[in-house]
Image 1: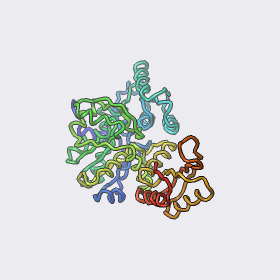
Image 2 (image 1 turned 180 degrees about the horizontal axis):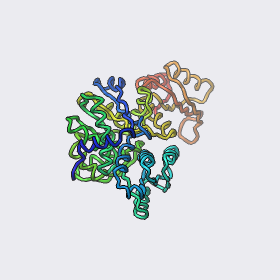
Image 3 (image 1 turned 90 degrees about the vertical axis):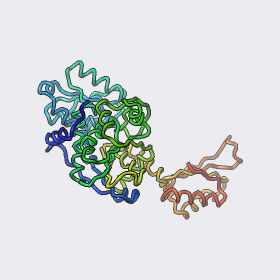
Image 4 (image 1 turned 45 degrees about the vertical axis):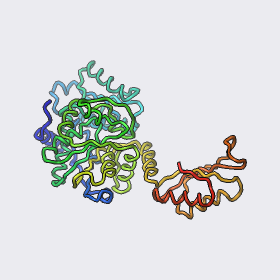
Length: 399
């Protein structure tokens, strides 16, 4: 298979002039503190439609023959690709139909419609691809794949060209990866320049390590909060590029991703979706592993507000700043007040208290369980609070 060349990516960039934004690169002092090396963030979360997807979608549709474009385009997506295709089609005068799962966040569905696409809802994400392919066969519309096409790869590769210009001495670029379109494009743009390119994948749904071991795209099962990279099988086009050009693939766990989202919110003042925070998580989890300066690509910022609340909480728990304790004590006046007083003296901030009288649990009569949710300053501080309660004679466990 012929790989996308830097010249193809430069041509894509010319086509995208005035269409996409050249997103900023900003130093991350928080990550520099963790890694002791220069780290910068490429902010594709500030791109039009909230992610890099507009780059590949526009280039793919722009390269269609006039009669193909007149027949319309169709896509399947839970969010970012849907919005990229919808806006690109609108700008190029093509009708777009996008199949989305009924459970997709309402803001993403509405945004796709606002960009001019006809949205068709089906039950599951897997069914969206089947429905989109059937629609293409029935109507003649061109199926715009989310990652597995050379024009998509070339469009996404323009992110890499921008990084080379914005950070001329870049040594390593860390890129989140699902199907591999962004990773393949950045590698095609930057590997020939001697830059180390690393893919970061959610461990909960990591198809790249077994695929590279097997020497061919391999399907896996799993789940992850990083829905933007929740792809069970790489593409043929992207696999060829990653195998030839990418130096390394690492995986990151769910808690590390949640901490990455929280780190971007608190320290960088950037709203980044879990997929986009995977690169941040990889850099934080592997301090000093790669040559610096390191650029982590924030691939998108489209996250459902309700999911964001849960992710932030998970990030706080993972950082030891949000703790749940269970204290067993005698059901007599003053004992609960004493527990709360000791937590306060240790510097903990109680968020919630649940007082449960035990029946049929085997505990001594007159015993109660108190479930405490509290804010702490980290794992060490949480341990101090637990030790303070235990030293006072309370039966306490952390959850």
